[in-house]
Image (cartoon, rainbow, N blue to C red; front, side, top):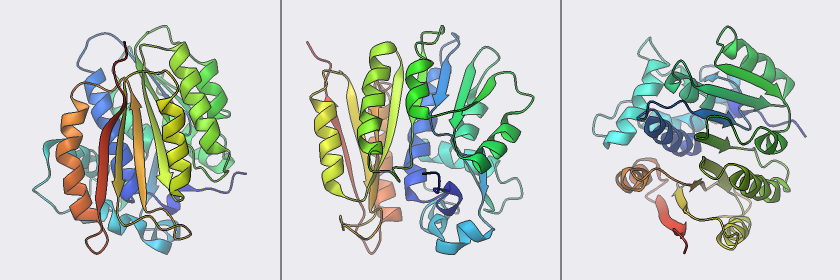
Length: 282
């Protein structure tokens, strides 16, 4: 199935969390002079209009990035994230939202590499346009679950893999876990970030259990909810599971998550979770 289009959801609360975590990991990677590799398994487009019909249909961005746009009291990590979104809107008005490839590309240095995977034909066209003439970027038309195994380990021996499927197919939950575990085993020194939506909590419970029993060490979970779990009422929360998280990430999220829960929660129903799913191990 290739019916999912992120343009309808760009800039929503889930994007805020996902791209906040993504930006903080990338900021950590560029602190060292050594080159890094970045792989985005379900890249989508480089950016999305917020003025067209898809974004305006449900107005999800208004309850996400829209609630942060005018704020000047953000925690430091959130302020840096918002600065990227502002950079993407040079007019000073919130008219567009950057996709994950934009956050990734802007952190690249001369020796770094970014591989962007996508299957949707329309998104692929836009992604190729986004990446053209930049030798550091490579666009792959392929199944991101497969590519995140086939392309690892990179010769740089350090980097980030973002696994961000749409979950429109229920088997994506199982495949996401399998891909994450397989990639971790091939690239033990890498940082991995897996995004998930909370639509049916039991699926996330199963995902957490599978990862907790996997034997993979150093797994952290960060989740943001805007309302109570409510099966059949769409996405009420989303999370990022990070393997080999930078040591600074937990503190940054400790400051950002309560703020986001308060700012983006519906009718005071915002909530969050942040904990170590598995520790350092023996």
